[in-house]
Length: 509
View 1 (cartoon, rainbow, N blue to C red):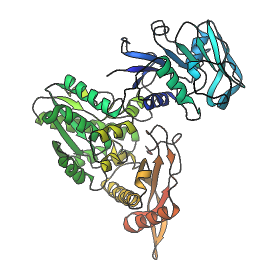
View 2: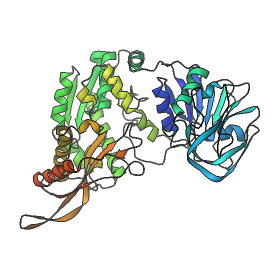
View 3: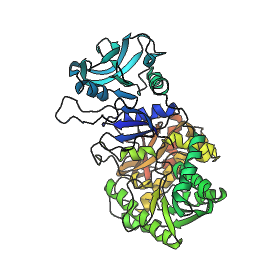
View 4: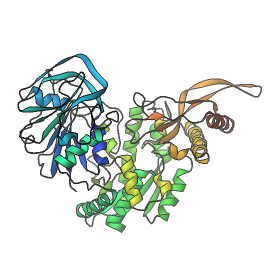
């Protein structure tokens, strides 16, 4: 596969958005930390330097040797990158009189510049920095200004090096996508050949070369990612793919049986393993969310190890890891401050002798769905909401018991079935219920109750990196609340989560 565009991450929250905007142009790109990227850059056709929470003027500024990049590749420097080029190449960066954050408008655009083709004067852009470029670097040519930012964009004479202090990847930069297209397609001449069909063809070829005649074992979850990974692998290696669907006791109601049936109808070689008692016994008494994730990850691997040994001569473990998992688990300064751990990121323990293959590792969720459609996977299956790897364990706050699992499964089933019956399911990116670690006083009939509280969560998102809560109809919420309280023994109060990500994650743990 052509790598095409290398994005170097300096820790900005917007870096993944750059990748998304580039992908929308049908151009494949990859994000690497600024201090840890491939030594062989021969497959790349352009480089983008991202933003950063750091200042180029500070002692702890993130520094990079650009000698083998600048002047050798078309280079776009965004925000921190633009200031970095200036600060270390003969220009001057100083603290802004006021923090330059939010919307601004381009009140000057240099004429006859390909970089700004089809971008109108006064076009809105998004600023996010506390430093500003006072003087351009050596051979710098000003391309654009805003009212407060004189050097909003520039290029370096004699190079295909361009720099902007605003963020083209953010939707508030109205012509941001156009600017990226101008740079990547018109200036860097990067081919726009990253399509679902092309990905499938390249991926199947890569899998065949990598795996050859080896046997691969894949853990199926019932979700979109593992399903698409399974069909891709099946297309590449056929009968050498062995799928295992593990019931960890934390799946949705009746999911183990229904998903098994669904997979067998797709022609996949699937074995169902009911390890629910094993998982629940290991989780007994544990209330720390990170510890729960680690236990589930460990037991999951142990079950896989046991099952893979039954299949003779298995060499590979396939996983449905996708790009947001990778991004959240990697940081520009080594191991990230943990948002949450992903049990399918980071390799396997030494005792497990399987190599890892991750066919979807470079795809965002919406890209996975498009690839799945290309593979002919049923639209209903592709439209399934994401479901966390640790299952209901991270939707049960506090310790886990079989009774709590039962309650949450029943509540979740009523919520999800209700969304489907009312035509709301496909309008929501992810929905689920959370069992809270508190009891609430209620009255049922003539009796006073002291029972559990559940929270309903429904969000809109593209890839899970950011999310907004969904304004579900009040009538629907009222109906679902009544149904849950009347039908689920142990629940007497229902609340609706109206927080967005950030600051609140989609899951509660």
